[in-house]
Length: 227
Image (cartoon, rainbow, N blue to C red; front, side):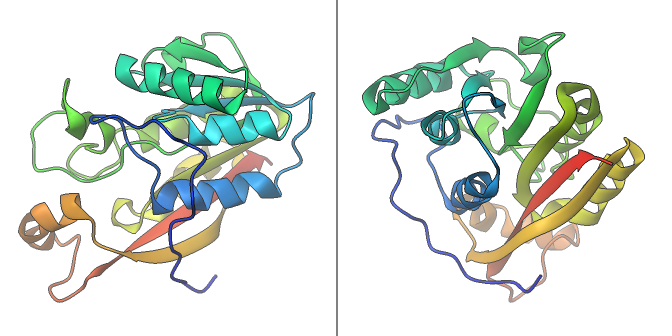
């Protein structure tokens, strides 16, 4: 699928305090992908890493029964406030990805996880960076979601996952395929580097993840389902 340039669209979220990931291009891509799915009153949706709650709110507006998970209590409060402002009922759970929903399965899983490669030795436990830092290769959360998806998805369930091209989309496709799912890149876009990438651009170039002179980052949406 050819790359395209996409601009952020107006968001339904009206409350996004400091320290909670605000909707950006990646959120917009998942919003578009989510609207393509057949969602109704019988659909159960899991939003992993809900942040400000915009994806969970959209799924609820489309009629789904939605559970939203985040490890950040501030994010959960933010999502709850935004859901109330939007007039939508959503179940918010605190926890580390699937640990918050043990033994459950869903028709649709949507996730915009942290995916920015970081020079730090470990993952941040506190602060704003927890919303985007994802280890040296940016795959600390992506790989966990890929591994968990087959058991979380119902027989005809779908996973929608967005991440940066820096995280090797082919590795995500391979991981999901090896886990027994059929996976493909459904959306691509190229966007200007944000402040986080700009702040560590030299390190990313040294790691071979960026090329000197580039100024656009590729984002992808991957859709997977039981083969």
